[in-house]
Image (cartoon, rainbow, N blue to C red; front, side, top):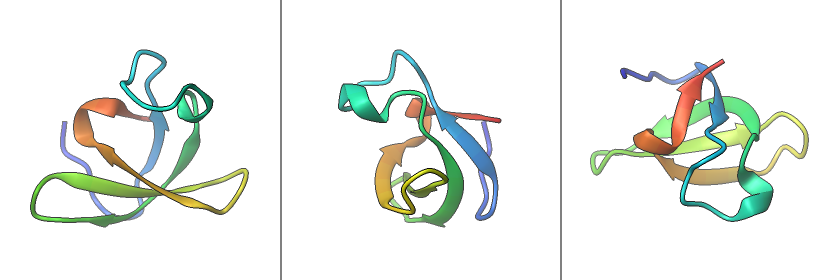
Length: 58
């Protein structure tokens, strides 16, 4: 799945991340060369890093 900055995404329920991050909705802020994607949470405003496989489009 192709992601770009500004896309609204949701962390998948089965993602290998901290449980409290599952279901998090936010906007993609940055994508770096190794495929990591920085997402800014809609609810907290905090940024978290994820792999593309942990995310889906809203």
